[in-house]
Amino acid sequence: MRRYGLGVIFLGLALALSGAYGMWSGWDYIQLERGWSLFIGGATAVSGGVVTIALGRAIGVLGRIADGVPATQASTAADSDKEEQAPQLQPRVPATTSPKPPVEVDRYIASGSVYVMFSDGSIEVQTDGAARRYPSLAALRADTGVGGG
Image 1 (spheres, helix red, strand yellow):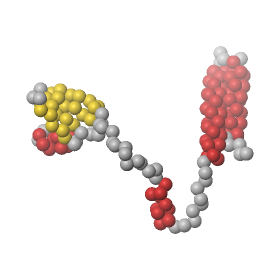
Image 2 (image 1 turned 180 degrees about the vertical axis):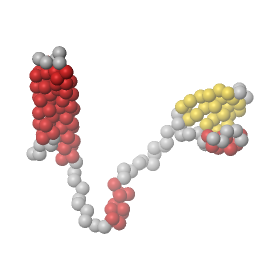
Image 3 (image 1 turned 120 degrees about the vertical axis):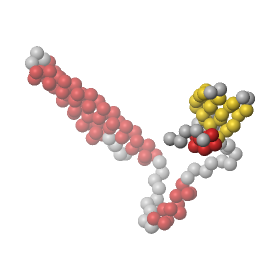
Image 4 (image 1 turned 135 degrees about the vertical axis):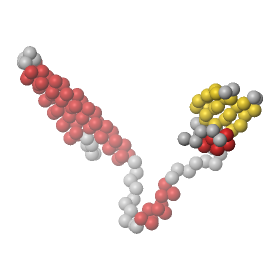
């Protein structure tokens, strides 16, 4: 059984403990610059130690997750073999799934026209009860001759 991240956790614990000692020893001299420096430096070391302990814990969890994933075979073949294997590793998407319809992102009213922007980049212009859809802002500008940033 491998112990991932224990070294990082122990270093974080040492950092946090030394920071706590710095805060404790600086408390007696808090009226002086040296005391404030010790206390503030100790508080910084404590918080850094806590973050380091959390990183060590994350390394441990990710290491155990990596142990549970089946290892891929070590490839000694050339890069061409890797390229041939790459399409096989991609997940297959069932043919029955249809793409989601675009979602309205924003709506803008100008000169009696309503401009509706969608998540796929398309724009619908609604004027006098008629609606026209453009695949992009560039297509709208090309059709109307307006703009051109």
